[in-house]
Length: 90
Image 1: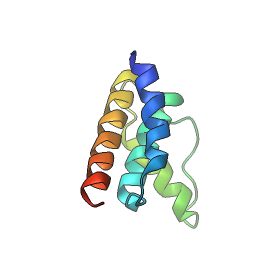
Image 2: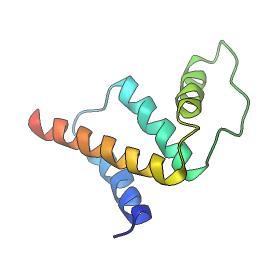
Image 3: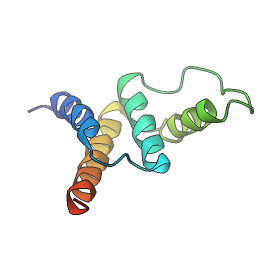
Image 4: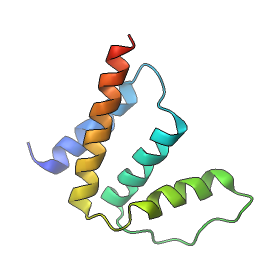
């Protein structure tokens, strides 16, 4: 299985978690997902009163230096970690 297929598989698996990830983990996943699928940030930073979108933008910007493959690999690793934590708490 190639990296792209494994990435897509884990993107689907993360939706099967019994317990929602923390906001911090959701932002990490968001940033890595966007870097994997879109590439470096291509929009301007949302305004100060738009806290949710600003946090998402910041999470994406934080991983901007990673290559697509690096971001995919890190995303897969993070999803595996969350799946293990989810299984351990069941």
